[in-house]
Amino acid sequence: MVFISPLSTESELQWDEDSKPNQGYNCGPSSVEKVANYYKDLRQYGIERTRDLATSRDKSGTNAAEQKDMLARRGVPCSVQRLSPTDIKAKLKSTRRPLVLWLHMAEIPDSIKGHPFDGNHAVTALANGVVNDEPGIWVNEPNQHRDGTKYRKNRFFPDKYWIPASAAIGKYVIVPDADKVIPTRRPLKKRWVVTAMALHIRTGPSAATRSVGTMSKGKTFTSNLIETQGGKYIVNGRVYDNWLGFIRDGKQRWVAKAYCKEA
Image 1 (cartoon, rainbow, N blue to C red):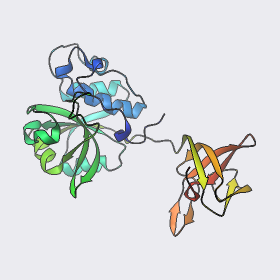
Image 2 (cartoon, rainbow, N blue to C red):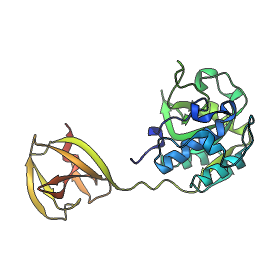
Image 3 (tube, rainbow, N blue to C red):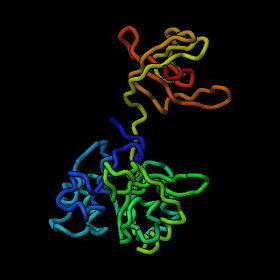
Image 4 (cartoon, rainbow, N blue to C red):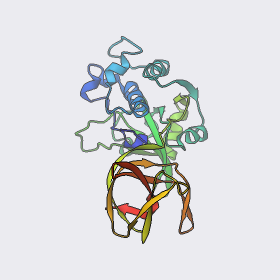
């Protein structure tokens, strides 16, 4: 399992069972957990377990320095920085570097954040976004109950709210040193149907490799791999480099993905 985007990882909520006994104080460790699990391709590690990497205190919040230590000890090199909104959006642009973002929540309406807490708070900034023509960021908001009616896996914070909330607390952000490295070739088991009249089957993910046959339009097959940076090819004037791998006669073969659709 490889998480391509932090938007696809499980939400991390400070009120979950793995956050006991410091549920009311674990917005920071929950946010660190979200970042670390994305980088490490984990569904769960443990919010309180993450907290314990940097402090043995109970019944108190954690600070940015402690959260940096938690994340580093989870194997994600990082630093505490003070970033402008432009810098934060630049870090998020790749969608492969989530950030622990400190906010003063009084600047954000309850309807946006999903709760009435107005104090200093940590969330995980996941990606830039636009909703109803309004720019903002997608976040993991840890101050939610998973079974609550207001729960949202990813919440959208418009710029007009989160930017003053960041400024009010000094613009502190815990920033991983680098984007997550995503392997270009990974498992993908999915059924496909050929849309081209005759699709070449090749020995590698490139048109430069040998063709060992064709599949006709309407033919179905099941992929076992996807290569996202293979040889480039053009379909209807657009350049693609995605290839689907599958097993044929006991050997690994490849076809151009743009000539296929999900069956």
